[in-house]
Image 1 (cartoon, rainbow, N blue to C red):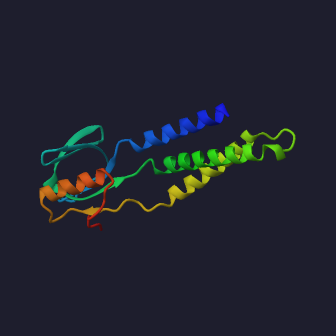
Image 2 (cartoon, helix red, strand yellow):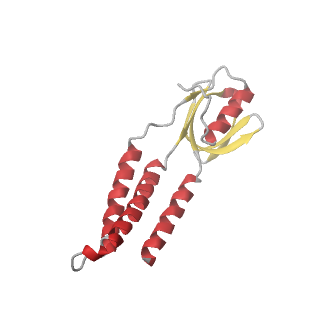
Image 3 (cartoon, helix red, strand yellow):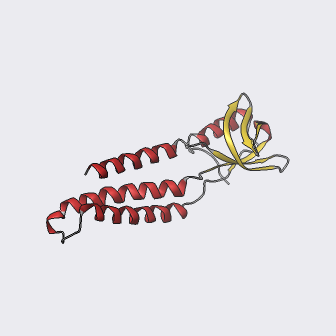
Length: 163
């Protein structure tokens, strides 16, 4: 029981840590240059700050034509969430059916099997999720672009025109 609770706490903590990871962005500039996998560092005045190729770059928001936030940890996150759900379900089922268990079968073996199956299901589900949309920023003012970028980074994509 202690092992199950400890494993559950570790999985939950890991999943929370994954949600707070850095954001990566794909950016297309007005002059057709593209930053494929830039690490988002923030907004400063009228500029977007990203790291690309070990260089910190300050891009004027007026030069940004399109942008997408990349969710790189989605598959790992799905596996961990699926595994955590499987662990809890398997442990509960194992302990509830313990009186009917055959010789040598422990509740932990049921928990391990459900953890693996849950992890696989979570991985497969995450692998087939739709990618984040590319947001068209052309024709928008710098203030509008700033609001949209803030919304994208905070995962609040309401009222944003996508392409």
